[in-house]
Length: 189
Image (cartoon, rainbow, N blue to C red; front, side):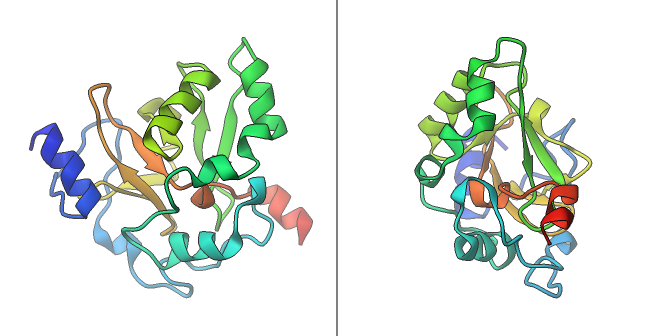
């Protein structure tokens, strides 16, 4: 399958790549089977970071396989002005932001890696969604389906892998990765 077919197939939900190759960990459709709350066992956390809308997050994370928050939604949140983003922007020593599953609080992405925060933001703005690369994926908790759908090991819909000339590019809904770490979520209950 060529790059064009992969991109168009991922956008239309019809891609049929059998594998994306290392370091990607592929999964079968069974990971997105019906569970207690849509494709997940639980609804999204009630205290998402960056002022992300809980209803939108729950719909996209748990009751959706193909749709996304609107392009640029992440720029309307407090993400870019958050203390984490400001620290990463000012950092010259690679200060990174960890993005957690909005349902489980498990780490899913850590960015920026092997690029600056400004490069991460520029690429994300160009594509409309936070865009992560292979080195920024926490593979213990993230899987990719053969159609490019990118999901958590717990059934949270995250977005899609839309490879470009630089390699795999994961366009991810901010509402899907705005969770709080597991320990912080338990403390706030």
